[in-house]
Image (cartoon, rainbow, N blue to C red; front, side, top):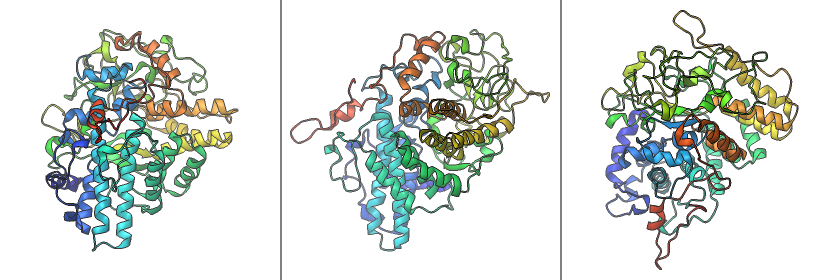
Amino acid sequence: MKKIIYCALVILTGLVYACSSDWLEIKPKGSADISTFSSANGVRVLLIGTYAVVDGTHRNFGDGAVWASAVDNWVWGGVASDDAYKGSDYGDQNTINPIEGFYVEASNEYVTNHWFPLYDGVIRANDVLKAIPLAADMTDAAKTQATAEAKFLRAHFYTELTRVHGKVPYIDENTVDPTLVPNNVDIWPKIEEDMKFAADNLPATQSDKGRATKWAAETYLAYIYMFQQKYDLAKPLLDDVYSNGGFTLMPSFEQNFMIATENNAESIFEIQYAVNDGSDGSGNAGWGSALNFPYGHTGTCCGFYQPSHSTVAAYRTDEATGLPLLDEAYTVASMLPYDPSGATVITYTKPVDPRLDHTVGRPGIPYLDWGVQDGATWVRDLSNGGPYLNKKNMFKQSEKSLATSTGWATGVNANNYRKFRKAHVILWLAECEAQAGNFQRATSLVNEIRNRAKTSNVVKLDDGTPAANYKVEPYTTDFASKEYALKAIKAEERVEFAMEGSRFFDLVRWGDAATVINNYLNVDGTRIGVLAGKTFVANHHEIWPIPQTQIDLSIDATGKKVLTQNPGY
């Protein structure tokens, strides 16, 4: 599928999608009539064109747009939380700084650039749905499957828009004039409807990697329910995927983040990345993360999206039990020691979960096969981003042919983004069980993840010895209360999914965002100056603005603006 996305995208760009600075400006003039695609092959081309932007990185909108709308949500799910700093230096991509510090305005370009690539995806999905009834050479079964795939993708785009902007205008295949659709209703029911149709009508497997399946749709629908705290609706879906989907945890944790083990037995839905496929600048290779690789030593760019002190501290474990330090408040004393100048490497000798060094690049620890990371030369600006680097999106030095080799973005590579894997299902199911008071099963599910962590490979030095004091153990007694169970599950989700762009949205759906993020801003603000004095306001900062450009363009026949701004912006 990766091989044909670029060609399909070229066709679509030339025939259907006139280049536009804004989704509201997309007009029928200059576009091919939808009847041009009224055949099985036409629907196929339109559908592939929709998959082509599922990663949020359609480069016709420019580099800035693709970084804002990247499917891994490194800005909105990572930097906006206690998971990561913007990193790099203060002046580079400085419009992310207000997102990191919660003083963003509606005119911010990252707010704007998150919006229209995702609505481009919505429009593409809608065009598929318009073309399907016209395709006389398609069987009813083929039409149903294509409809299910298009609705899966549309639900994905709207989920991304809704999690970030709150209420957004719902544009579907029957909308006559998108400029007149207000954003005054909650569209979660529409998203649920699309994803339910996908779950009911998609096949269990697909011959093309990266296409949506029944199991991907059920997993996504369960997440949509969980985001709204509808645990009773999420649980049967998660049970079905867990018991009947045929997915198994990979033997070792890091195998979920390696090019060599893509589309593995744990993977439920992966965003497919490719290099050397003829696309401009490896645009099919996760361009949305082009900034997020080491600035020095590896020859990559540009030092953004650096793991926080808070994230690293979360991997500490109890010396006696190997369990997370659930009852310890996060303070400056929780931080692992480091030299702020980078001149020396300070070794941390207390126990840590081995997932830490598969997730984070740390001074004194081997960074994949690139050598031992030092304290300074691998990081662009220690004072702005701290001493740590992301690891999950990186390629091995031995895989350099699977990364871009020209231009400045030499870190962009063929390492897929794993949107959903069985570990998600297991821990979300544990949440549902804890919410229902089934603490024995909740404990058992969490222990599946912890036992995999215990038996996973550990990072080793050249002499074969472990690079740190690794210790992780399962819980030996069942969770005794709902409060403790949820605390343990949330801690597990943090260390399992760190740097995967989900942390901010998890804090929001749990209702923990204000408490956790304000403590983080206070503590990490003692080390990272851009965080000092910043505040997260409850019932406000859980969502971001509607782009001011969209509001200004949404004018009805009376001259009144159709779109309304979120409170506080």
